[in-house]
Image 1 (cartoon, rainbow, N blue to C red):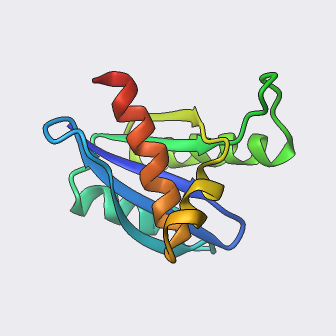
Image 2 (image 1 turned 60 degrees about the vertical axis):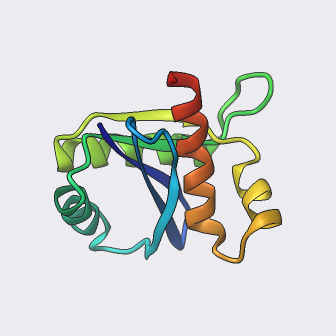
Length: 123
């Protein structure tokens, strides 16, 4: 199964690819969060033959979500409706901080951390 990991940001969206054969997520690209975002994601999903999308949502240690987390959850629902591909939201607390310590391409690296954490839980 081919996966697309998404790190949602107000200005940029980080993307990562992974599959259940190799069980490794790799940074893919960063795209602009703008009016054509859902169409661009739909094109990527089709081109990359994505079968499941994983979207990171920041959740606090006590399980609370903030307004930004609600916005990301709504975005995930829009992506699922537009692409007709299953979307799962996962906790992404600290992914951006960890990616910042390890990369200059923070958005796609954050997406790779989100997706890798998901794959590690599955396998």
